Length: 377
Image (cartoon, rainbow, N blue to C red; front, side):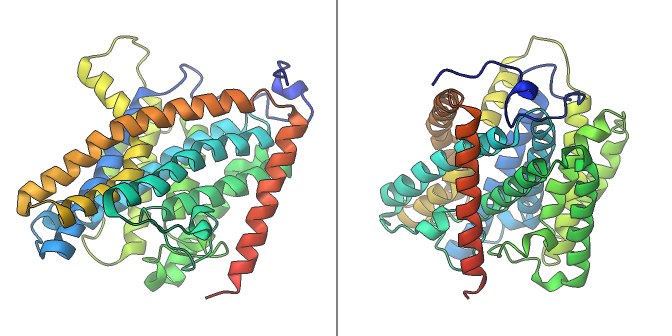
């Protein structure tokens, strides 16, 4: 079918907030956010590489540097970036297209990584469709890449935002974000001992401390348009990051990380340079921002392969695991971007009715699976 070239506000089902001025309209993508993505992915890799050094070799040296703080902060930055981008996209894109584009962005590379990497690197040919669904089903799935929990949270957020838009509440998104933030903080204060759990059911996600960064990210475009993000706030971001506990107190750590992440994302958007030129180092950093999703998906398989199968220990094993993860993310990242661009072009030829139909099929399936597993332990 030919693409519908009418403005989105004139298409069936294309109700968007036309008065909204996107904060990302100056260029297709914000280089500062790309660099921040690259840093966040590297933080997570360094944290996991350090943790697995303990599990495999009993070597605690690296966790003294790249401990829990790195992992918590990396995830919070990812969530805050996602929240900020989704807040803009949701107000300028019809709800069905919003959800289908998110599905096409998340699932294809996840399926490739889940089906190929464990087999190629670890000899593990098992597969769990429950886990691949990315529905919040608690501890009922076998997550082969060991990082899928953040994607479970992301898909929950996307479905929730789709329903917000369908209900005609997009103009009240900031108020909804504040409610979500309050639920996350309240849940953390009420149940601090449960916040380290990452395999949760859908009714638990709003009350988890990890959700605070996404909720805060939803507020970022609104705050940017009001010039809230003064460079002096960087001091608060640093202080909050330093205050993240090195061990334990995961809930408090995630809330502090959310503060840091939201400020960093707000500054990255507010201080974006309009200069077209860039240095080679900036170009590399931007590319690694593009490949950060692939790095996130592949690194745990590479870490396990390096520590379990290569004749390396100590610093050599750590360096090889991190470097190997980064190197593998390059071809995977290129494939990821090309695949998404191709799938999106194909999907955008669909009619609005087709978008609506497939979006509701996905949401209906998600709801059925989530409710069924709500009663399973």
